[in-house]
Image (cartoon, rainbow, N blue to C red; front, side, top):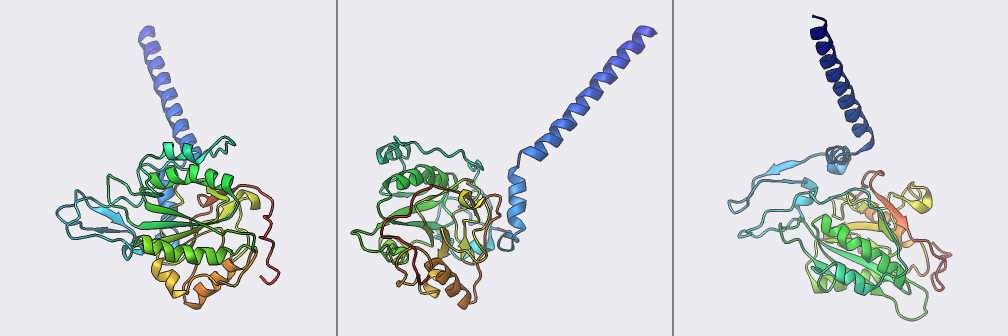
Length: 310
């Protein structure tokens, strides 16, 4: 009898310890490891991610896809499309990335690491991308910054299953830098090259840290740099609309692009925000937890001094 009680007690203690351990693992993982579902719920809490619809695909589609209504007006599909649409949240997303900036990195290294990128363009092979996205980078004398950005941006966009093209718009000579005019030129030239749906205006010294920060346009102009290391991972100031912004072709046309008369650093992004507001649109942002960037520190360039009239 005593032996029976002892075995029973051992079994109970073993089961009890397992339950405690399982409970601890469950609580610990919930506290420390953000899940894809939690990110999705956080996105859905924002105004521009609140409603999802399940749309029936044509008979040639393999399955029904979740489409954000805000994106439907920029999703292009032909009636004889044979591929299914890429999901809004790609299965390849990894979350926070460990960024590295090797001084030995070259453009040739980046080309070898991205064999499916041709002339700066890529599209997913396994599905039909939700949008066609042009990345416009204003540039002058920042070769190393450009290499660092491309090192991380190409795989970042590919994990999001984005159909994209990257355009670097270089200002030659030693005249005062004009970021806004370069971006206007980039927009016009990119449209000559391809019928892009969405345009992301991207500073060369800002590297995204989390691939849940989706490089897609929304039904309102979108500001993507909510937090960055140089500002203690806080919004730079209320109304800030610089660094990295996303506008559809229709939105950018409605505001008549950037102003061309801002020479030197600053002012053009605030002007663009005012143009957005004058058109009765409003700026939307992803959650601060994921819209985080590392700014590559540097001294202010000669010819890009602060605009005294900003």
